[in-house]
Image (cartoon, rainbow, N blue to C red):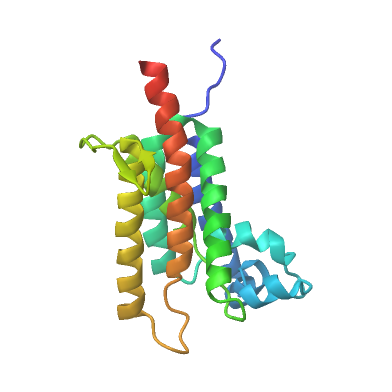
Length: 219
């Protein structure tokens, strides 16, 4: 009898299922709004060192937990489409453990940058967009095929992969700023553009290391 092996997308599928189960459970219990404040990232609470809300998680823990909370079915569906599509593409190459690590790193980096950008905000940040942005950045780097020339900036030599990462970072940040300017309105929750940026930058940093590891192993 052959030993059981987890499917190649076990980590990605597990993350998606966790998001769905949490959302459905909160809906059935009528706790969706309360969950946003209990598990969501509230920047003002994080920097103030405040205690968790009743029944909530400690503020530092919400740097990760907010990625599993969503503001509605559309929000959840959009994030899961990209999570499953991108996650499965890179999990067979990186393995389940690295995908989980990347998801967590993207969530934390995105949450921290969003909290830095809005330090006094009492509006909870929710959603896996920052973590998914990290997966997307790593995906783009790992599957990049277009050649990129090395460069030298301010006397510092940059490899072709580093130049590619910097170019992608500039494009992504520009896109997020445009989206924020168009879609975000004063007094409304809007889109957490800095969580997207922070997650993407974390994914680029992680993807650079993984690309060098994989290419080095194949050479």
